[in-house]
Length: 403
Figure 1 (cartoon, rainbow, N blue to C red):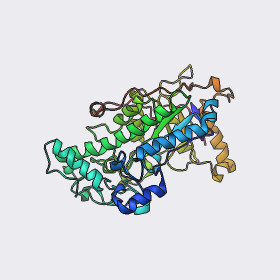
Figure 2: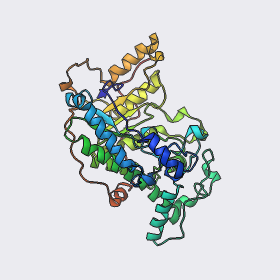
Figure 3: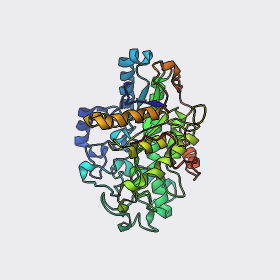
């Protein structure tokens, strides 16, 4: 188990490749941004590969940015001082749409809003619908606003649009756009850093609210097409497996009882599902806590998720997370009682093993990054989206932190 607050250097690529240049283009063409009140904050996926006489397309600029990072940090990369690179794929570095921006008035546990109403994505959808034999289909106009309740909308209510043929087509197109965006950027990163001893990672957002609503509305608006009869996370893990990537997840400290009943929140089930599907795809899983936590309740939940089947006799559990990032090393952590508990937590994360200063003896060897297997296909996503069971998860950990 690699446990650290990323003492190793860590880099997250920006979603804004050249701020001044992009804003200049945006003044004459505001459709390069998403339209659902996140305008001027995030570039639409519809312009990922759009060429302009005044700028390279965004994906080319992301690639240039990563190449520049490699050139300037090559000495540290070759020395092993940088071992993890998390590649930013969207808001807060996460592979998702900006469906719930607090800066624009979203409040937990609102359903969020779909982000595909700029002219470029709208044109892409109309073209896809026509190709599918339904030129009359259009983007949803009944999915509500940021803070609506799911049952108040025509799209997410019981037997709403989301279960119709048109709704399923839209949700497949919307979520596939996001996954293919990640596939392209991670693929470029893999080619750039191939041959170096470094891990690539992508972060997936822990949208635990409304998980217990039949529509999973908050996940859907963010781009995760996850329902009881459809797996929304294994396709992302399948994409990462193509590029030897690590899936980084969040809300590892949360329990189902941490939020109000109105939120229909189920972080425990969500974490179990996402981690299980990544392991089924044969990739490493890393994670972090979503909120600051200093007590036994949060620490023990993290320990359970880090090794869901406990520690066996040889100290090598079948299921274990690759790494964990603790948020945050604030002054509160170092208060006397908190710090003593934190030290116990760190030791339990290492299964009570003594400190080892020899990196060669760590549980995971960092091997040179390979070139990608291949890029993802629509068939890959459809196959991975078929429902499948999760690994057996213990209800308690055998490595508890005592208060």
